[in-house]
Length: 145
View 1: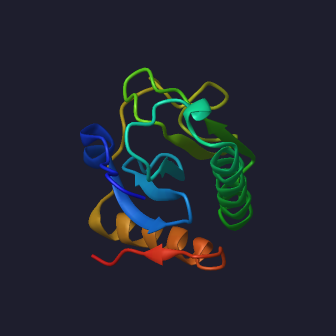
View 2: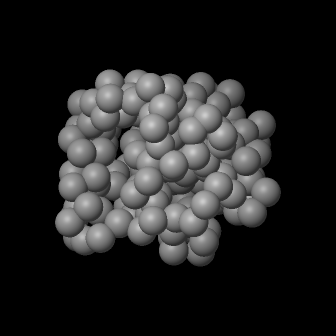
View 3: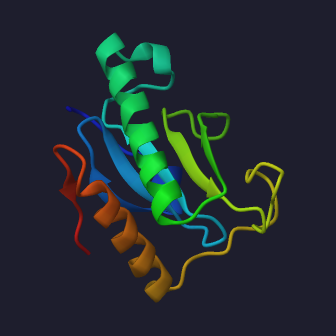
């Protein structure tokens, strides 16, 4: 995937986890929710329809596979998968595990309270959990600190 650059805001708000065949997996720096972000590693893509049909299928495959693995492993009550792009136009998909007792339930996570950044141990633990989940996926490249 050539000329891929991660949006500055996504880079500032997340930690890298791994590369799937199409997407970079990022951990959102908000400890209130198990929250991953998938970003297709393609230049200048802001809408799903700008991807090829095969890449659209791969994007959905990666989002649902990651979401299912997170919901199971992290004991979620609900899985939210969404694309917004109103603040960051680079195409990205939010994969968020929701729990009935989380900070925003049942409202959306966006614009609800202030993020609670991970401490170093919490960040390392969640990144390790996400890395372990995606290790079973095909063609995964992990990131080390």
